[in-house]
Length: 508
Image (cartoon, rainbow, N blue to C red):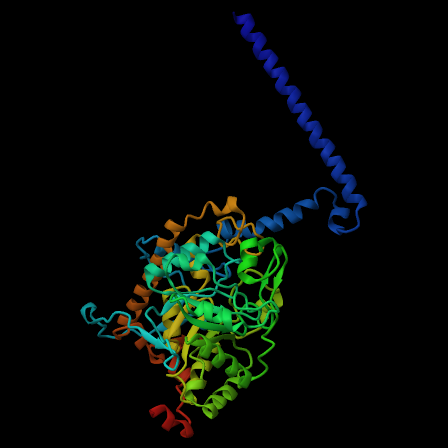
């Protein structure tokens, strides 16, 4: 018996050693082949000068972003959203305790930091007022009484997967906020959850275009006939790519998306860089009023601000035509906004960030007596309660977020939105990857994120002594300067007086 056991062990060891030698031989052979390829190719100097070893450079470069995210970056260092922000959203979306201990990890004397001025006599909980609806589009046939000041920003079906859109729709219904379709048109997935919908009209007119790509009144009427569709937003530009149309890689253009958008299956979908019909403020108002007349619903526009003199021209043109001709709202996007695919020069260096552009827009509208007529929506990297509270105090009526809601869906900031390889199933049409996103579960997290953010904005407003967030003013915020000392925001951005020629109209 012992002899047979010894023989079996000897045979196994012999087999394993043979396998080991074979594997080593294959590795050596592969190394030789790679060496020959590297020293003979001319496309890559590093691989030619350092054959085999030079290949690790590309590997380490691609893995670097993951190692930084999980092992090396501090909680407040990472871009575009740091770990502290993502963790807050994660806890809020799961409905977990979102308190922290021991002290703030945020550098509070960094220039630009917003410090809210707490009141010695804060608002008592029993004196607090719940969110009040705010009417948009008083001159349209069907104005919209919007309840939530925090809503889901524009994200197209196509850029997002079907399960992601379904989860956002159901979550928005639970949270009683609206959901913007993005420029990719209206799908059944948007409608499935029962949420209020803002239909965005991009430069390619997806979903409301005729066979030549022009705006179709018949299709506008068809969309407007749906009670869930509350408003229309004309997209002039967005923060991540001002002056550049939307980009949807052909790998993401499925038959369903092609049908909804009116484009070819499997082909890159690139929108024009602006609306050909809009050349100036006059033609912008013409388009807005035409859409409002056809649909009967509020219409506004979205833009990232760069030059802003045209807003003065717009305001003057509105007064020449009459106050009813004004856009019902303006969505101010930030130059650091996000998207699934954009040229880096535009994403990095074109367009003003929301910290600078929002006060400018609010002040211009105030100066021309249009502040009450045109509602202001702020969007672009506003994902935490303090950022949303800052926007409301600056003068925004609403705040929209896209990436904040993506985090609530489970986004891990893998930066693969344009590759169709999103590991969380949010921005991919790979059915295997989509299986990880359960709309029923994720919709609850979407609603939790919205509700908890609203609740904590209310905490800030109560600490400042006001009964509800929309009562926050610039006097309630101080902004840290380069010397580390804060200055009241109403001193940095004093509220302008209405120009004399428009005071009578404002009173009326």
